[in-house]
Image 1 (cartoon, one colour):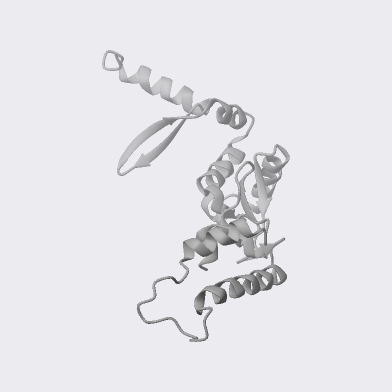
Image 2 (image 1 turned 60 degrees about the vertical axis):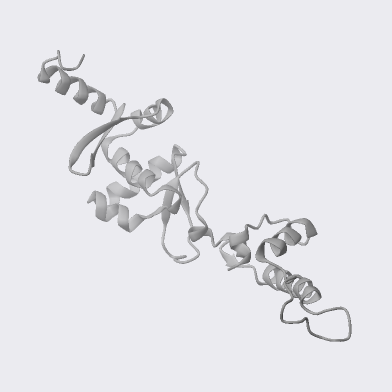
Length: 195
């Protein structure tokens, strides 16, 4: 079907689709490839000027890890005023949002509006409003210590289990107990409990 078309017609069609932002062009390996853009995203992108679209694409590529405003500036080579205007316009259209990083609280990190920030940015369940929640951690530590202690020593007066004892708690058992105990309303993952 495409082999019958003159190359000029294909180039014209591709350029029109790129101009309307209905397809994206990118390099994969050493080959130029094209990818269709979702309708809802194409609608959003159609309201952007060139600078906004360029900034938006870098932010989109960063996924839920976000991207620092300085990194955007370096990658786009836009003047600070132009970049700030593009970021402000994208934020006002609720296409992007600024999020704070617990690792770098002074940096302004941007990400797509609908995405949930990664644990790397938020600090996970151990942080509340970008502050380490020491009260929560201490309460959890105390409860976990008591639970593990109750399974670490026999109820009899011997004081120690024999070397062949295999009834010690596993991380999975501790995690299940924690989920069912009602100690916290925070939904902790097994990986959170082993940190």
